Image (cartoon, rainbow, N blue to C red; front, side, top):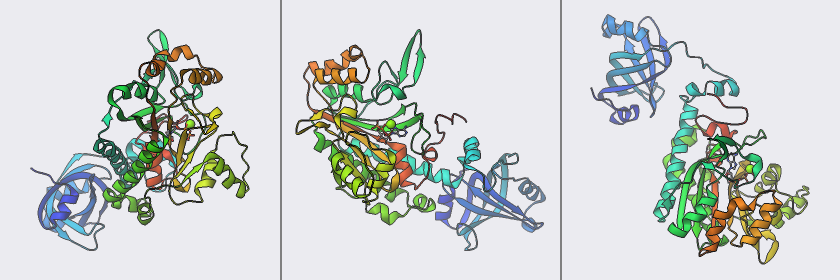
Length: 429
Ligand code: ATP
Ligand code: MG
């Protein structure tokens, strides 16, 4: 027997169809059984009329319970009273897998739904988000592939830190200790001398000790590294990527965005160029809002949120204080107290979605910065080789995929952007 999806069945609109899926809802009277069937594409109401079917079929229909899996054959027709505008009059029905009493009912707490995540994934909310997630990955790949970038990969086991020691996960590696990767960057910088324009989409691991709605301990980062690019070039690439992802998702996921309560017209306005301000200018904006930040202190979440309130698009903040930046971010020759770096902050309080910079090519400067951070420069000798043998100016950035999904899907917690979230306190299922 050949099966089609519920969506294809509704597109066909008339005649006999074979479909299969899971029981989304079921309601019986002594004459009729209404089974709403769900598959990955949609839901549809299926009706079994006792007077029109064999006793065997009627008895099988009565066995259907929420979330059992089923194969159904019947006549499809338009019906405005049905939940999705079509109804199937069932002529054959087979329960493939029975379902015990399903533990998820209405109005359950977010924690309960996280405990039952393996089942809650079937909800329309999670299904919609995961479809958007898939589109975001597709969009990133398309953006870079169309520009002739190579997709490459770095090891997940790393002997050193990239973003500072405080969020490193240690793992036992045979008789030694290694760390789970925080970013591909140091390896990417070695690869550009071969391939020039590269990107990756990869898991990253950070032992985030604070409980925020924006941090996972395992998340996915889209990173790029480009030879010969300066800060301006990489900024242009970063804003083009974000605008491209938004457009791609609006074009491919209108239905899901609507279901999630997102305002599509608002997303359509996310076009380049994005506003750009320096860190120093950001402090002036904050000061006018009555928020005092001492020059040299990093911007915290509340401060980032206060700045983006002034804009409808993502905001790019450049030239953070050199002193508080990772060791590879070079000083700006025109303003040496600051670094040639940027963050991109999403609208509406979704936080930093990109962090990027030019990369320092001065080995001595980097050694000094590493020592200041309590690191051992000897461990980075192989990395310094990239500067010893034909160094070129280059730049790159990392985009937090889940932060972007949270923003596009209008979610209040990053945990819902990934099928099985990992945080300091959430490690199951
Ligand atoms: P934050 O200040 O929000 O912790 P960061 O400065 O540590 O971010 P980067 O090191 O610049 O972040 O990483 C690049 C991008 O990866 C960030 O802009 C963000 O979008 C994303 N990101 C960083 N840490 C996390 C995390 N723990 N969970 C999800 N996304 C993250
Ligand atoms: Mg961080």
